[in-house]
Length: 474
View 1 (spheres, rainbow, N blue to C red):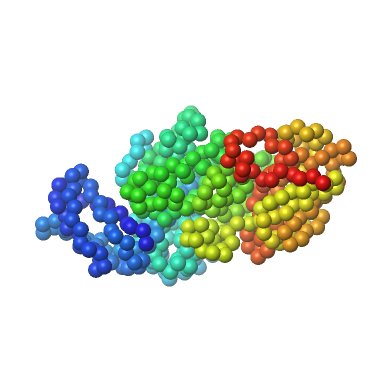
View 2: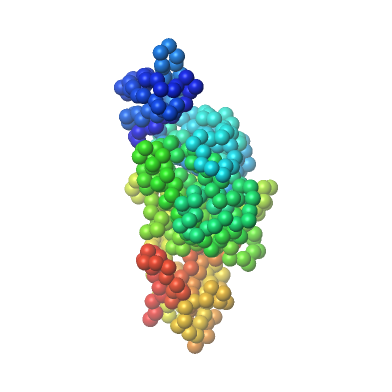
């Protein structure tokens, strides 16, 4: 287990020499406090508990009771991360079941803003609690993710929720991260102002030792700095990693695992590219993670989990169980190094173009169902770079194999060739768990992608290495 920083700032601690009474397996420590706040870093302790931890000076003591040792995960984002356990499908059953998980503890920061970086939370919405206490108002994705991890790990999991509905990514980023992407402040107010949530709801948590983070956000950036999300999201991850590593005295890993939910759905008949664009940008325009730009990350695809009848709006699907399960698969593989845990859906490794069809080879075995329009192609008579505003037409699935899908290109004229190909490139691409391409187990959906015969622009060497293989012709 990693070491666990433990911070106190009681009124009676000033420049005293403090003796800390620790669990039986940990030797007592002494330290001198100069600033009114002191920290003890415990040697590794076997996962479990509960323990009591006592701090004493002269004849005065402070006691922490029911202390567990385990892993802490930070859960951030906007309204789909905020979405409470009480609103999910089978909410009453989930809340009843929670009583069987006393070693999965929850904590929630209050929604506050600050124009300066805070060293401590201004307020706490939910103190460290044993479920089901306060759980009905806690993040469903966060809780279900932690519960799924506990089922596999069988040791304590701490869950820290810090999120705010309707917020773009900019307020969650430090000025350092925003500067890297050239994101200047726009004329906005409230929790959309640059860095105000980083200052008040993330910076105060930096002294924690966390195992990793999960994130569900992006809807608010479909119409706000959309074109910058392929920079701002990776930059935020990098910056959080550096800040938590430094703030915890090196106890949080510099490359701690970071999982996220690729956007679900919003408008069923929408013709806008906003949602597919953000899904693409969430992967740094690669289509999959981990990749060279976003290492030690994992993604839960959610575009196949729409909820047309959600009483909270279609933007808020109630099935958070599948979202959390897919995230937990990624955490088990990326964060905990479990071998043979599949956590990513099929992704193309090669695209072969002929005059009559496209043959897509995936990186794993696939389960395929017929579709007339989930794939789309762009026909062109020139070799010029693909135009994002080009006209797209459906490319029906002709047949499939163990790892291949063949598409008809008959819609292109004899003088044209396929200039670009895309999959599931719309806001609401398929019905519930009914996309055409899944893993062989039918558990993990293939993520959306876009591929061009001739790249329009290569930003840098990493993007070139990360990009989908270009078409090969026969």
